[in-house]
Length: 185
Image 1 (tube, rainbow, N blue to C red):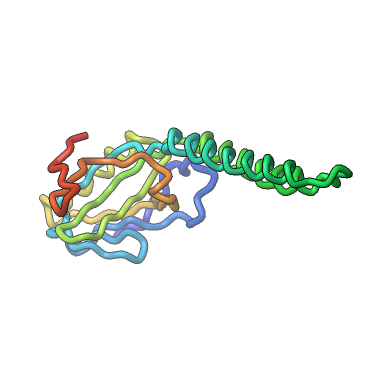
Image 2 (spheres, rainbow, N blue to C red):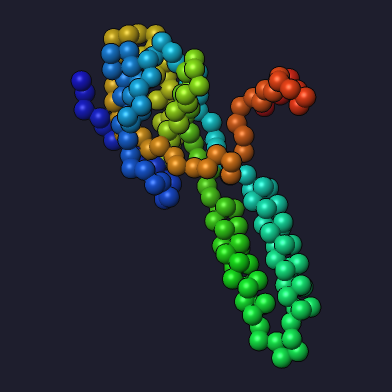
């Protein structure tokens, strides 16, 4: 079994998880501690995971509107001497909201490789270079086609809240009253 060879370090500064080993050995794909039989892999692809900046702006605007209403109510009920408590109650959350907005708007796009299996599990890993991810996809496909292939390398596993990113892939809802069929992206 060859020793893992570390590629270029990922460019993301805010990975919470350390680098993990992605390894193909004995017809198994290991992503850190997770194991996927290669015969269950139905799709391996690279894509760009982009932060949903529109959603960040919309949520910021909604919360700022709430804070302005609170400020208006507080100032209407304030005594004539006005100790400024209402302003502080609104100013602190406003600063926090602006900080969160800046963080969400400045998050970089992630180059990600997704591995989907015949069941529900999905593994996502990332590297600094998109071309390197594409080579990794080719190596996994080669391992699927040629059972004797084995390799190992270091990758990073993104720790992201998927709700803050733009949805990737196709959307299907064929159940219930909200049936939209298949929407291709």
